Image (cartoon, rainbow, N blue to C red; front, side, top):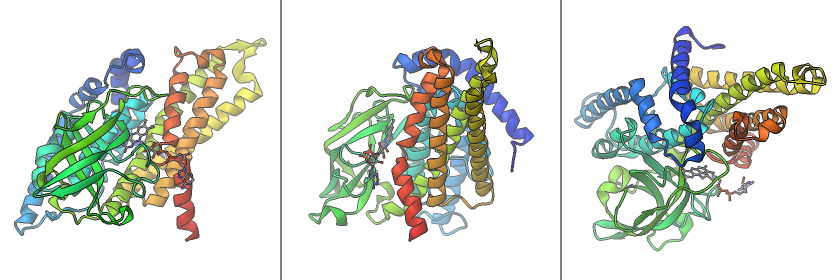
Length: 412
Ligand SMILES: Cc1cc2nc3c(=O)[nH]c(=O)nc-3n(C[C@H](O)[C@H](O)[C@H](O)COP(=O)(O)OP(=O)(O)OC[C@H]3O[C@@H](n4cnc5c(N)ncnc54)[C@H](O)[C@@H]3O)c2cc1C
């Protein structure tokens, strides 16, 4: 694949029209008004029938799993550790990535909020939960009727999430008691459903403890969700802290209802999916910056000619196009691999994330530079895109973590 198909172009144009009509006019309030992004996302779901599609896919999958549980053909009911397709799946990868790209041309935070709710929270329940848990929590997340959060990061453990995790679950009769705090949690302030990841404390050393995940509902006694944190960018994606203070949960909230699903292997697959999603986000940011810069370079006259005729400006535009083409090709590669049923492994996904996040940051900062003082003003979009692009180098694993993952896999 080296270009979008006619069908994909049609979808792209339709989503772009939606973004222009529904998102761009609200950019100001999403950016600076603390307006939660969920109604806009729900409108996207309704407009394109994503909620109905998710409902039907969910129904088919649950029917298959029930059949398998009864001994017929289909998927096993035993909790598995696949990343969950969140309703997208192989051939649909392009269809899933196009809205990401298009939304990121205007408001990348919307993608963060949507991606965490569907691609992490719902996908974790779909890959690790029992049928009953999927029906209880995942369907409402997949249709975006409810908002989900996925909480692993703690004040003292981000990159080393598993190694330094302090949050605990202790058995108490038939129940568990959860304690600990989480930070930088996307949708944390508003989530209806939160995946709380912690270690089972059996009195053993922390490094030997099993990692478990529990589903928490908003308002449970002892569970606190803070308001949105102030941050550099991604203003349309609320981020908060979570606290568990002796939160009592039954086994029905332990994903898979078993302590014996190895967490780390499943997490690796989820990380790959997340990292390839970042490449699509980067593409949206790069495309929009380049488009704005080409227009500005043609129409802004300095020293008697359009700035696009100055070679130093041309170099910026040429590098932006180089990054756009490379990033687009990596996105095409994701689509091709998914269609062939061979999703990227973690190392390849890390290479892709490292390159595309850096490319988006370079392009967005150079776009600010090309716009001069205007580029520094909030009124011009490139200022927001530059602030938003920065986080692509931090979340879903920092650049440094991607580098060590890639080097470890090459050097053994
Ligand atoms: C906007 C936003 C949304 C987020 N959403 C979520 C969410 O929904 N759920 C969630 O659980 N988390 C979320 N996070 C957390 C995010 O995943 C972490 O911030 C990220 O993994 C980095 O961890 P940290 O912030 O603790 O940095 P640290 O791990 O403290 O890293 C500090 C610095 O040290 C470097 N470093 C660390 N270890 C190494 C090493 N081995 N080699 C070289 N350098 C190293 C890092 O690269 C970084 O430069 C979010 C973060 C942000 C900013």
